[in-house]
Amino acid sequence: MTAATASVGFGDFNARFRVYLPQPPHWWPGATPNAVAEQQLSTIQPLTAGDIHAIYLHCGNGWRKIFNVYAKLIATLPSAVFNQRDPEHSWQQYRDSQLLQADSDTALCFSAPLLPAPTGCLQLIAGRTHAKHLLAQGMPADFYWLNHEFAVDPAQQLLVTPFFDYRQLNNEKIQQTALLLALLQQRADVATLALVLAEQRLDAAAHRL
Image 1: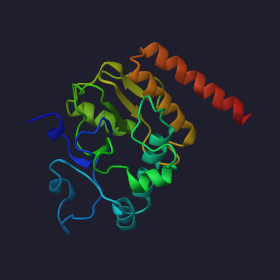
Image 2: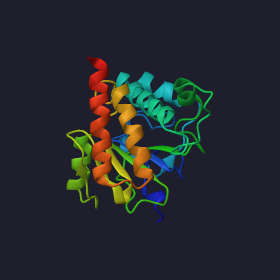
Image 3: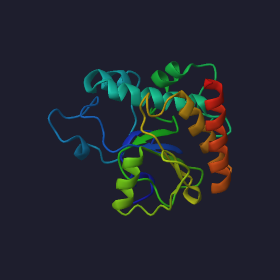
Image 4: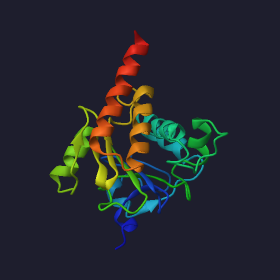
């Protein structure tokens, strides 16, 4: 079994940018009605145009928020970190035309992260609770908590963020996530990551005064 085949979810089979959630939606185009969702996914399968819209129509506003936050994050990343998005497209256009589709270089996974990480692969666990659950199941990660919401394993280029929700991962924290991912790609150490995150939070607080 190769590293790629060990993952299950939606998106590009060979994606170098992967987000990990606890479980899939209860429905998606092509899913068998009334079957257990987790048992229907055995690999990474690409979505097609219109699938994201159909999923959140069937599965609720929470899934719309997940896809929107994912698209916003990709749109915020510098091209040196992620260059598979047309810069002329808004995040909404990107979401509807590329996100989690074949050759998009993105995946939304419902399995454990690929560890050791493939070369050049950035991985993000959405939610502190999910990260702790994965650790309890034996995930071989060594996290350093930068604050109560963000954690990193620099050696694995693995980041823990707040869950993909407008309140938990708001626009300010999306900016912080993009910066941390850029620094992880540059192999920044934990001290640098913690300092930069603290400075970002202070700057954001000052702007709110």
